[in-house]
Structures are given as C-alpha cells and as structure tokens.
Image (tube, rainbow, N blue to C red; front, side, top):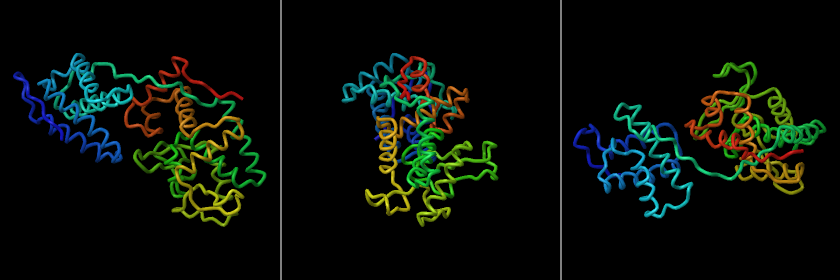
Length: 320
C-alpha cells in the first residue's frame, strides 16, 4: 500500500503523496509498460512512501541528504545490491520528474546527478568481427543454405536494428515496411516493433536484402509469408529438415549463441549484438533521443551505461 507523507508547514500540496504516486503508476500503465515493470515500480515507490512517512518529510524536503537516508532505509529493508538500490532511486527520480512536468512540484532531487550503476564491461563484437559474421552467413545463404538465410536476417536485426530476443521472436511479415512506404522517420524501409516499447526501426539495404532472402527461404520450405506469419522459422529436429513456422524467444537466443560460437569460436548473446547496435549509433553521432527511441528506452538515462562504458574504455570487443 502506498503511504502518504506528512505535508510541510510552509506548503500544502493539493494532492497527497499517495495520490501522486497512484497517478504516476497509472501513467506508466497508460504508456504501455509491462505488468512486471509496473510491479517493480510499485514496490520501490511503496518503500519510498513508507520512508517519507517515517522520516516525516514533505516532498519539498527530499534532497541529497534525504536520499542518503533513503538508501540506509532500503538497506534496513533488505535491499543491499547496488542494482536494487539504483533501481529504487531511479524510480523515485522518475516520479519526481513526472510531478514536475505535471506542475505539482519542482524538487531539489532533480538537481542531484542520477545514481550510477557499476556494471561489468560490455562485451561486443568489433565492426570487422560483426561484418565477417554477416559475410559468412550471407555467402551460405546465397549458396542455398536456408538456415543461414534465417540466421543472417536475425543477427542483422539484432546487431543493426538493436532488437531484443523477445522482439525478434514476435516480428511478423506485416511489421516489415517496404521501401515504397514512407516511414515516420522519413526513411523507406524498416520494421515496426510492437510490444512494451512500440517503435519504428529503419533498415539499411543490407538488412532489406537479407529479409528478402529469408522470405525466399520460407517459401522454398513451404512456409507462409503472409502478413500475420512470423519472420523466423525453427527446426523440429537436429536433422534440420522439418521447419516450424515460428520461433520463440528462447529459440532466438539459442540461435545467436550457436552461430557466434560456430563462426567466432565464442558464444555471444543477443544482448551483446543489441549493445553493438547502440554503441554504433553513439559513434555515428545520432542524437540521444533518436537512439533511445530506436532502442525502445523510455528514458535517456538508459543510455548512460553505454556512454560511460565507451568513455571509460569498458567495452571489450571480439576481434577477428
């Protein structure tokens, strides 16, 4: 249960903390956040409400010192990991950003630098390694290897489009925008990503050509390319003879790890290819808001990890 804090003597907010927290969570729901995300935010903000009541703080009084006290409060509640504490602090920060935009309060906490989270170095392929991977798969696909046609398109959408495994598994042919269609970004080709973070991701000619080979492979396998059908197929046996029309998230992850292990000698996850795409966008000088939109992030804060890792040389690259 979300708990209201005591109002200050100098300022009486028209809405209680409980009301504001409820409004904020409702806004997240309307923006399409998943039940898991809503539950996570709810737990973090419930603890924030409990802290504010115990500390007898008003919203105006939540400053840098109060934030340190909140961290101590979280520790007493069993929150000890850096990731868990940072998540709670970011939830509170996002809440204050919301009420500031709504005109309720401009809190001092918004002037505090967002809490950073120390993470392990990012492991991504180098440009040459990624291009060599794609070239091997392309040559195999051109030679008639249908599995390679699937793998090429899948790896490109992860490493060039920055899609997650769940998003790759959910893509249908109806989500592919052909070059004759004008997209929302003024570009001719791309994919619509439907899910927690709906967006349009523009595609290069290389990716479009790979998708065409994938469609041809599906037809040769007797699989439909109707708009409602999924892009990626799987196999029902190790003989790779009988194809299934759709591929689930765990199948996408398995394919990426298998292909990278076979060609690179080391398995890489879908997340590594997605990180590669985001780092490439940063290196190309794309605006942060465009990168966040392409990656499906609701906040620019999500890009800080990639920027910080790049600046601090915490990117470990797979070389040829």
